[in-house]
Length: 190
Image 1 (cartoon, one colour):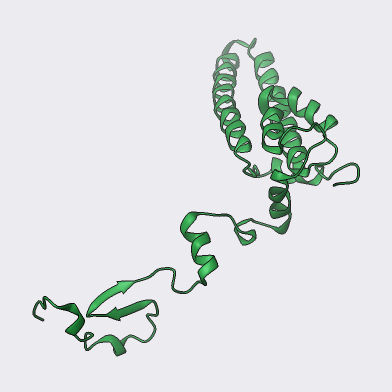
Image 2 (cartoon, helix red, strand yellow; image 1 turned 90 degrees about the vertical axis):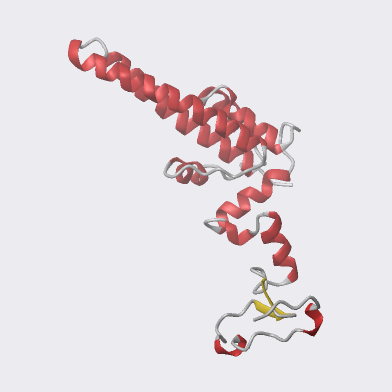
């Protein structure tokens, strides 16, 4: 094939009809221009290009319902992402306080319950490992494990604060299931 300085006069390649299963390839002026979004409609095309979340991006309809409440009003009057981030601020203690005081917003209640369960379990495990630390040989291993858990929990704590402040619905694998079960609003929602 020779180079043509005027692409408007060129013809499509002769092999274009040999691959009917490859939709999305557009032959215009002899060039192979692939549009990865051709299978989606115009509105979905923008959503995939700009990374906007849609309801189908969540694991369940329950996750999508909780995530939509990131902009709903809260009992305290704070924006929901701020209240959710504050639920992680003092580990399980702030989770308990926010969970008890928040009555309407499911997004905030979910993050408060998740904070309460996650950091409550971490506190219990670290206390148990520190108690075992008095045993001579096992104590060294238990102390090392307690230190590793503390480092990992501080990193996770910082990530959960930032992501919940951004309004993301972060659902931890097992703990998130329990938090979701107990995060339904107490009173009437507005």
